Length: 136
Image (tube, rainbow, N blue to C red):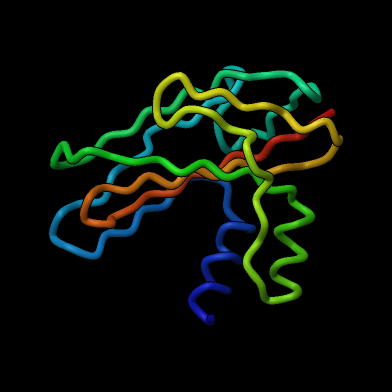
């Protein structure tokens, strides 16, 4: 639980990219994550209910096959999860695609959101990148 709280706090406080490798095999690298031509650490303003193309550039030192997990959180949900010491609840079905042709369905509710990408190789080495979104 302590590790989880540390990771969640790091997710809340950082916008950018981090990597974790448990083996001699290197972790994948997220080189860029862009929405509407803007990349982290910018706060990206988006219109509610619209769809936006997400462009991501990812490499792996050994050329391993990669999987992607996209999660969209309301920033208020992230803070509440830390406060209540529980896992945050992502907004379901807002991102379609994996690493190519990825589309974001913007929530209708105005506010600040965090889009998180986790990329893993077959050895469970991972990289995370997050970008902050503001729905107008």
